Length: 97
Image 1 (spheres, rainbow, N blue to C red):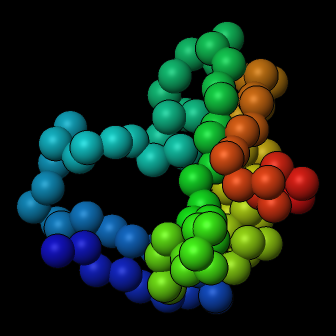
Image 2 (image 1 turned 135 degrees about the horizontal axis):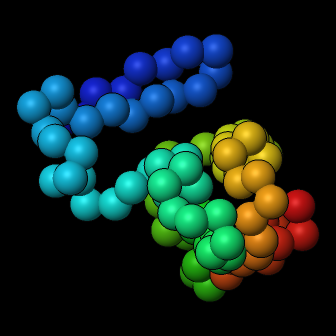
């Protein structure tokens, strides 16, 4: 199982030590920004749990909007360079931020 460590208000989720990078299901955003040719643009679709029509949330425990978006923006601004980036989301609050 993944173990999460918390540092300065940020939770970092890490893989098991015995899992090789090539066996991980998806690269991190930072890894993708570092490894994909900079001439390739990215569509960064931001997933965030939304409230359903019945007033229930899709997920009970999740990060606050601003904190979640700040981490994504920080990584993109640090590692994207001159790469073309489009942000998208099905959550209207994420799109308005």
